[in-house]
Length: 136
Image (cartoon, rainbow, N blue to C red; front, side, top):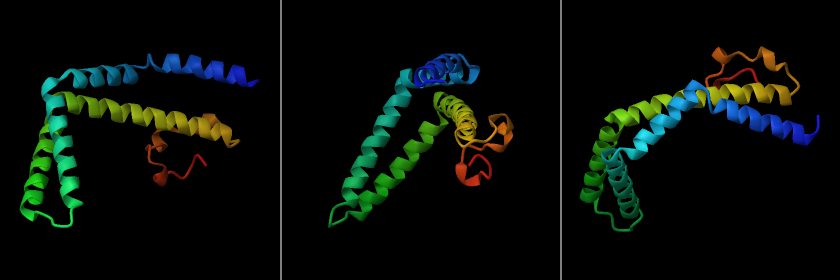
């Protein structure tokens, strides 16, 4: 098989993958999160506070009271972000897609490493290669 056929098949597979229900759910959840103005405002506040905290931590003279206040505020905003229903849906959908992609990668890695891709078991793939005993 020449390189072009391999790439062509990968493009075809990518188009099919985009139709997988997990990928569709992920893209919908991502769009809903992006369009959630309250969520985006919270994420913006979180990022600004984190930048401010990092700047204050980098100074020689640290305002420990302000640093503690920022840390507390960042944790509070983070909790609020993570409780947002669109963010929860996004995180759930993303975890499903991450697991799917890890499994696909394990199958591809098995093939590249001369192993039988048919023997790669989805239940064995956690997405965390550190816990894996099997695709290398």
